[in-house]
Length: 163
Ligand code: GDP
Ligand code: MG
Image (cartoon, rainbow, N blue to C red; front, top):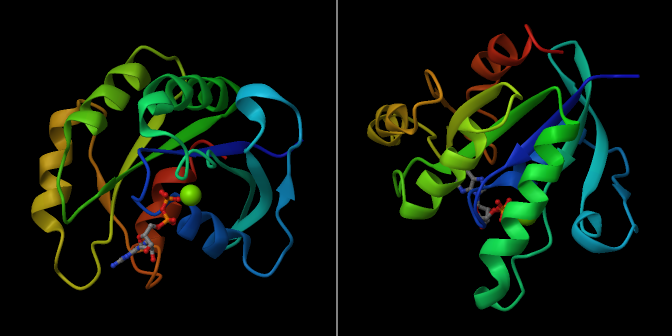
C-alpha cells in the first residue's frame, strides 16, 4: 500500500485547497463510515513524481462551533495515527493562534512525524508566520501557498523521507 499523508489543522487554513491541488483532477473518495471518520476524504496524490495517499481531515467547518474542539481532536488524532506523516497547516498571515498551539500539543504527543507548513504564504508574504511556527516545537516550518501552487518543491523535500 502507498504511504499516507494526513493534512491536519484548524478550519480555514487551506487543508482542502491543498488536498485538491495534490489530488488534481482525480476523484476524491468519500469515506462513509460513521463517527469521527465520517467526513474524511482520501485521494491519490502526486507531487513532482512522489506518489502517496492524501487524507483531508474535513467536515467540521459548518458545524456548531461549541462541538468543534472535541470532534476536531478525535478526527485529527485518528488521522494522524493512520498516517505515515502528518502535514500540519497553519495560516501564515494570521500566525500561530491558540488553537494551532493546542493542535501542536496533540501532535507532539503522537509518534507520527509532523511537517509544519505555513500556508497562504504566496509571494514573500507569510515569512513572519513561517518563522512564528517554529514556536510549535515541531521542527522547521515550510512556507506554502496551496492556492497559488508555491512552495511545492519545499513540500516535496520535506515529504520525501517519509513517503
Ligand atoms: P480548510 O478549512 O482548512 O479545508 O481550508 P480551505 O481549503 O477550505 O480554505 C479556506 C480559505 O482559504 C478558502 O477561501 C481558500 O480559498 C483560502 N486559501 C487556501 N489556500 C490558500 C492560499 O494558499 N493562499 C490564500 N491567499 N488563500 C488560501
Ligand atoms: Mg476543508
